[in-house]
Image (cartoon, rainbow, N blue to C red; front, side, top):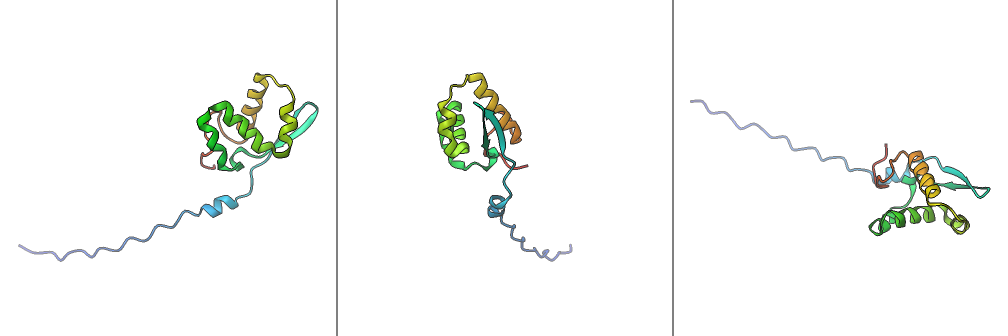
Length: 114
């Protein structure tokens, strides 16, 4: 019976750390523009909105959608919100914004970037 010498085990190379700073520094996505009440509004790419928006997710879709518009429109939100709008119009606007941002309606804004 022959004995084999134990194989030397190479230490594993440390995995390269995921660089979240590089993701944060990526160029912002293309803004989404729409016309409402004769005025042009501009919204950021949905994936460029701060994650604090997710805090409203547990309050339901409507609250999350409202917060997305409030956050995205910034100083223009009050003017936008003061105008009457049918729910089907709001839904169509949000759907167009999510599709522009490469998301499907109902998909989390926390999804990974493409």
